[in-house]
Length: 111
Length: 110
Image (cartoon, rainbow over all chains, first blue to last red; front, side):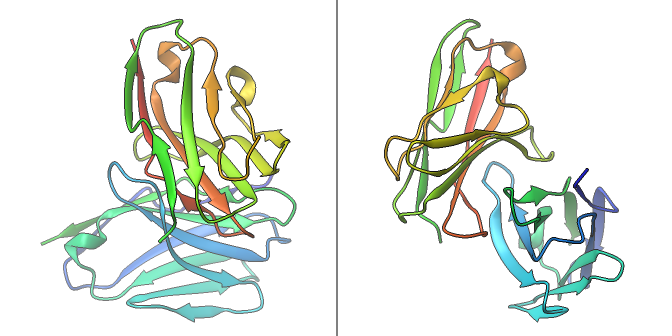
């Protein structure tokens, strides 16, 4: 079936280092992808998105990379800060159903 | 920042009670969604709606119902709450594909 999965359930990084969170998706028809950040006790918050006609998109301290050949999505966070500690979800849009969310990766920033 | 609201934020009730979780958005989004999520875990789609008088079931819909009488309002009802319903319930809305989430309702059923 359609699914979006994350390679690592947890990731610990030193403050100031770069973080890379990975996501594998299974539906080759998906044409839109989103990364969400969820802090404890809050709803997921939109971070950045990318459409399938692009392979890279940059925001403020964040970059999303899309490799359609291997159906892989990644989120890079530059100069990781304690405030970046959260659970990160990727989501794909297969086109005819609501977004399909991955299982989430917990990012812990070590001060 | 999305304007989507959920009430109550926290609710503790006894088994067998009927409850309604409220969700409202002021962005005029046609699409709305309900998810169930245990802390730090994946989101499970319960119900969604693509417009007034239109509702669809998700993965975990069998024990709850929704209604969409107004564009801005999408309440979720549990007819008979059970301890297995203890979880966080997240509401979201979208104009197209990007969903914007409310703060959630944390439900505890004793």
